Length: 434
Image (cartoon, rainbow, N blue to C red; front, side, top):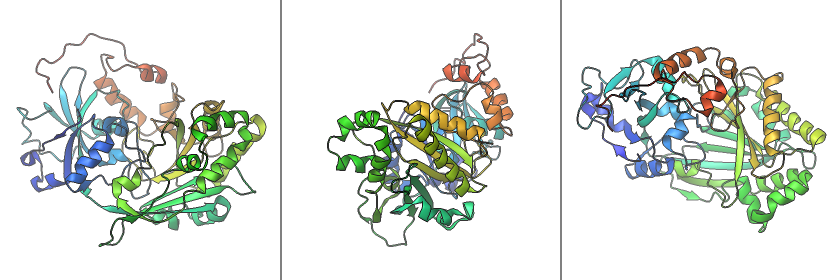
């Protein structure tokens, strides 16, 4: 389940467009896919910051990068090949999909048995957390391989905040990729921050320069040789030291010149032997984002003051184009994604992240706050989907009920959401084979 498959150009409405697509099995990791594409001088237009996920896992949970002109990973999908509860294999595309229905003929070398060109099915299948069936493969749109330049600047939120006063029309967001990582606590009266800007460099630019440390934690560990064993222990015994540790880590990230292959620049890398997790929320970016960020920082200060609970990492803000997928965190709106990082083993760490989620969702900017499905810490419960997705949930649910009519795709996830279907015996299509 990790191979590139062959597209038959003659089945496409525009056969010459086959060069712009890749047909790939769902179990491939993003790392392996990027390398295979690179060998063919192709690339994905956008990626998240981690390449260890499987393709299906990344797309189905809403993985994204950053850039108001760039969609999430699901925005690259042109077809989903899905094994249904009956065993029938569907190739699901939008109503005006890439395949010519008069030329789609099931048979040897064709994975899918039925071409389903339906907007609701497609928008439901993009982000469904495994609730609609087994995803066998995808057809993705790709672009010619390209370079990205990266510049990271250490600043403070107090200094930089005015540059975001224009919201999604602010100059920093005009870059292809912009994000800001902020220490939620002050050191010396200021919230240290790092801005990251990535753009396609001018033609003729060569790869070069040095990124240095891929992320704040790698930079911190390099300064503290014993950090691998002692960092979590120390922060548990002296939680008030967290602001200083975060500042030290962020201060290592200044980069003036780094140009590399797009997928290498977008991947921040892993930190050996240090486990971490995160909570990520989706907030409508069509509002005063400076005031929203100020509010988030104030909530962290409040929890530190009242409960002595500290985040063991910065808060990252990324910006993503709106999506048509029914349960995508960016559905229907340009979105500010707020990621809150925590080292594994920090006492009250998960409680703090859940508290922040509760405070944000119930506060003055809480309307429409959604979660990243891969980073939700099981906080979404029965009834929440309808509140988070008032315009699209019913449409997603209708498709779900068609494709999980027997309850075969029920799971602890659907149980928690209160949408599990009654179990029924189902006869499988004998001709289904992959």
